[in-house]
Amino acid sequence: MRRKVVAGNWKMNNDLNGTVNLISDIKKEMTEKSLTAEIIVCPPFTNLETANALLKDSHIRLGAQNIFYEESGAFTGEISPSMLKSVGSEYVIVGHSERRTIFGEDNKTINKKIKTAIRHDLKPIFCIGETLKEREGGITFKVIETQVKEGLEGISESELKNLIVAYEPVWAIGTGKNATPEQAQEVHKFIRALIQKIYSASFAGQLVIQYGGSVKPENAAELLSQPDIDGALVGGACLKADSFIKIAEAV
Ligand code: PEP
Image (tube, rainbow, N blue to C red):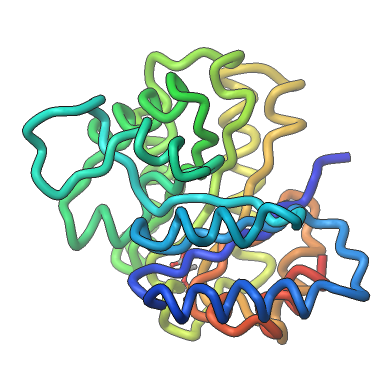
């Protein structure tokens, strides 16, 4: 059976105090609950070190929201893989739709970032998903296939042993309008079959594929009960400890 993973993408929310409070609330919510899902929190860069210290005595894992693909140098405003490692990041989100749409990241850039993460033993959470226009244009599978093939180009199966894929339809992110369990399952199944075609059945069979896009306590159980949905990448609902942990409980 595949493991289940619920990750919280805090985006640009919570200063240092907010981080201390939210982590303490999450830890409180988790006591007395025996969660089977692996829990990851992804605070902003500036709060990773503090978050890491606060998470030391817990099972909660730490992730960053982005990475740059160079090791060091004249890249004003960017954060290198070793910087992320040095403050305790285990995971890193790569290719989030907000990075793609607001900051112009394309599949080539995302591919370089995944390769860099792997080189530094950071576990990538690789986000893919179609826009509303693409879905309505009937090209969802084509878009997903291109994102997967170009995002993972030149990376071997053994290098991807820690990969998590997050299917996040862009039209469902932050809109309150989640994909139906059937819509999500259809794409997850497609992604798994594609990974099997590119790599192998055993790799595809154990790959964690999260769903993301307006996941909340009210819809989590139905989404997460689908056979190819192995957890959630949560935005808005991860900013309150009770809703985040309720989603994890739904697993
Ligand atoms: C996200 O940003 O990854 C996300 C899924 O956001 P939300 O849950 O708010 O739709």
